[in-house]
Structures are given as structure tokens and as C-alpha cells.
Image (cartoon, rainbow, N blue to C red; front, side, top):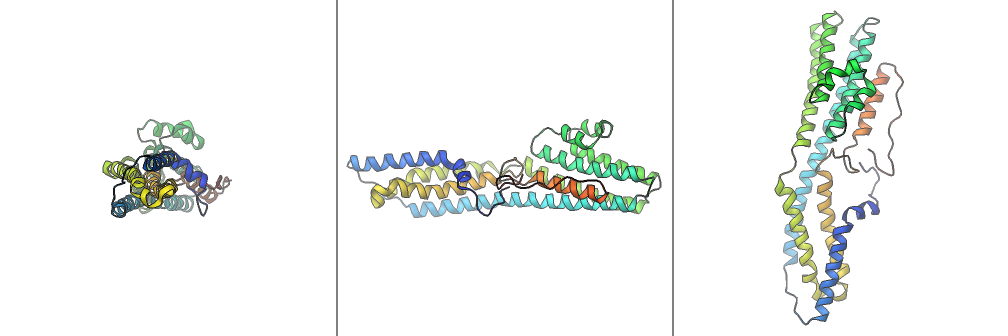
Amino acid sequence: MIVTATPRLSQILSEVWRPLLGLFVWDVVVTVTYYVLPFHAPSLPLTLFGTALALFLGFRDNSAYQRWWESRGLWGLMINASRSLARMTRNMLPEPEGHDMKRTIVLRQIAYVNALRCQLRRQPVPPEVRRFLSEEEASFALARTNIANGILDGTGRRIDICRRNGWIDTIQQTQFESILVDIANAQGGMERIKNTPLPNQYRFFPSIFTRLFCILLPIGLVETLGFATPVGSTIAGLMFLAVLQIGDDLVDPFADTIHDVPLNAMCRTIEIDLLQAIGDPAPEPLTPVKGVLW
């Protein structure tokens, strides 16, 4: 996620320079043709076309941003639920007999959020799980298709062991289960966003219409702008191409690009808070790298 006040010009150009270069070349071709060959450029209703296209792109970008913001909200719920789980584990399990179980549940939750991060980004999950859990602790989850859900299931089993050992009663177990349900619901929402792309019409038609508009733009402007057509048409086209790119950047919040939800930083936040809750040493928070928080 870009955290600077304004994106760098190099970042903007790196995403749109190819279509922008093609648009500029086309603008030059239209302008040269207009002055070399005696033809009358047709009068095109560019204002009408541009207005309709702007509304279309705005609607698409709004839908993409809603997906991005919902993803951020779900991870906010995950952070809060993880803190609540660690607090309840620390306060409700007795000392000293429940000390090891406290640390096990906390480490499992840290492994869980990192496993979920890797699943959403289509990255290898086992290495992240083994960073926090022993092979014995991780084996049950790693044998599951959904590794993150397997870790959460195993945490629920350990809470049940605490109840059977007499460390917590059924009411306290119900409170634990309520938090696990919140965590599972948040994971389900994230998987829904990841596995359900925008409808094909939302992705295909805006791209086609924007490029078609950019092709027609110099034809409709050449009689008015003359030799300035390549500059004016390219700048106008840049606006539409940039808006089109914004939708592409936000549509998948878990694609591991500079525009996505900063899962690494949020998983590190959870790791710090949970380790400190049980008195273990914690790593430092992640900081932006060249204006980007991962």
C-alpha cells in the first residue's frame, strides 16, 4: 500500500507508459495526416463520449474500491479478534499448569494469520507455518486443503482440551468459540473477495471503451488544436487511462502489489501484540520501503 501523500510520477508512468506511448504515436500520425492529406476531420461528439465513459469508469472504480475497503475492514476485525483471543487466553488459563497452553494458542494464532496471508496471495504456506509452530503442532493443519482453517480448527481443539482439564468452564469455552467464529467469518469474507472477481463486463468493456475513446480523441481535436493535438490529446487520454488503471490496481486487494492491503505489516502488528500479551520478546513493526508498506 502506498502511504505517501501522493504517488510518485515514476510509479504512475510505469503503469501507463505503454498505452500512453501508443496514444502519442497515434496522435502524431493523425496530426501529420491531417496536414499532409487534404481531408476534413469528422466532427465527433467527444463531450458526450467522454462524459459517458467517465461515468462508466467512475462506477467501476467505486466497485473496485469497495472491495479494497472491505478487505481492509476484514483485516481490522482479524487484528481485534486476535488481540481478544490472546487476552482471554492470558487471563482465563491458570498458572502454572496452563502456561504452555497459553503460549501454544498465541503462537498458533500468529501462524494462522501468516498462513492466511500466504493463501490469499497464492504464496507457499508451510514455511510460514513452520516459522511459529513445531512440526508436531503444524502437521494436522498442513495436511488440510485449507491450511489456515486447519490451524484455527486445531486451536479450537486445544481450547476444548482446556475445558476437559478443568482450566475453563463451558461458559468461558463459549466465549472462546465466539472469537473463533469471528475469525472464521473474517477469513470467509476475505476468501470470497479473493475468489470472486468483478464480473467480466466490468473488466472488459471499460478497457475497450477507453482505448476506443483514445483512438477517436485526436480525430475530433485535430481541427481545433492543430499542431498541439499530440500534446492535448495525450494529456486527455492520460486522464482516462489513469482512471482505468486505478480500477485494475484496486480490484484484487490481495495480489501482493504496491496498491494492495498491507498484509505483511498487519500480520507483524498481530505478532507484536500477541507476543507482548504473554510477555515474550516481539519484533519491530514493519516500516514503509520507498513509500510503500507491504
